[in-house]
Image 1 (cartoon, helix red, strand yellow):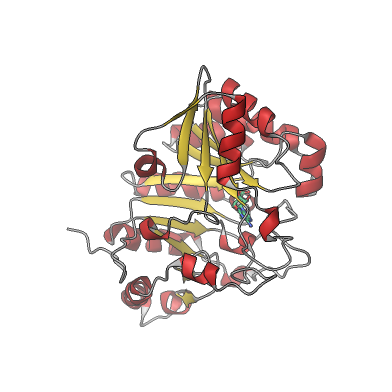
Image 2: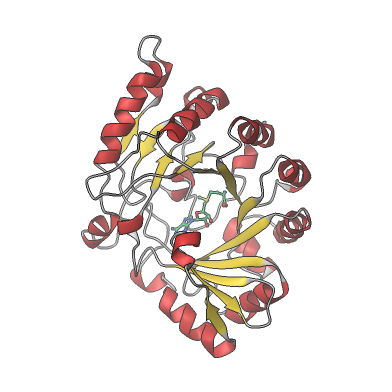
Length: 333
Ligand code: SAM
């Protein structure tokens, strides 16, 4: 029998995102920011500590763990760690979010270890624009690694941050990509997370606009029960296509009422809402010789109860600022 983590709004946590590093090999304009300070190595959770937290989360009813970063594959030994986590928690749905620049050499081993689901971030299908957004000329590496994941039988979701003036002129290309590849091509509204990201209300390419524009280009068939199976994404099959299109609208149509997520930052803090900078530090208790996991468990329980409704924070966002100050590269998306 699980002890569940339920908040005052009746939401149960069943999905935990774990950032394994705050470092990234890309410097996306809207995500990483300039000149940021990285967390010293000694303050980053060790892999054994992460496994302990996952074990606790599983006892609390968490069924899905997503590793993220920074860029998870930047951290030494990450692929081996993920493989060992899959062996230790065979019933847990383990997945990873990556920019797919460094995953190439590990794809087959990860797939053999049962890691079948990977989310790949790709905001443009234009190689020059890719370099401008990320600061690195690695578009062809990412495309090759998407193919490699598909060839290994992985379920691939490609996530693009939907930004006006950046990629809103690329819908025909994205639809063609999802027609010819067995991927879920998902558009995530640009969120006001972090400072100096260039976010403004009119930089959000809204999900409803994407849907209307996409419907002018192709026939889209709604996937039934899509919310249950795909979390916040509204999914559509493309008539005659191999892949699907998905829309995620955290800004214009929030899904706070059904939020089942908790986030662990790479320095071992619990963040209960993407839009709130409130964190609960777990690392000191985790590393304390006398406190350890029982205290961590108590902190997680109290913190989860207090999980806010993110849309209320959005509604009170100060003009011209992000809803929270922490940059997405530190939170992990
Ligand atoms: N490095 C990995 C990657 O590229 O997927 C994992 C970390 S990255 C922070 C996770 C996701 O957050 C990426 O898909 C990124 O595009 C997305 N992201 C960053 N800032 C965002 C924002 N302001 N709004 C929406 N998504 C954002």
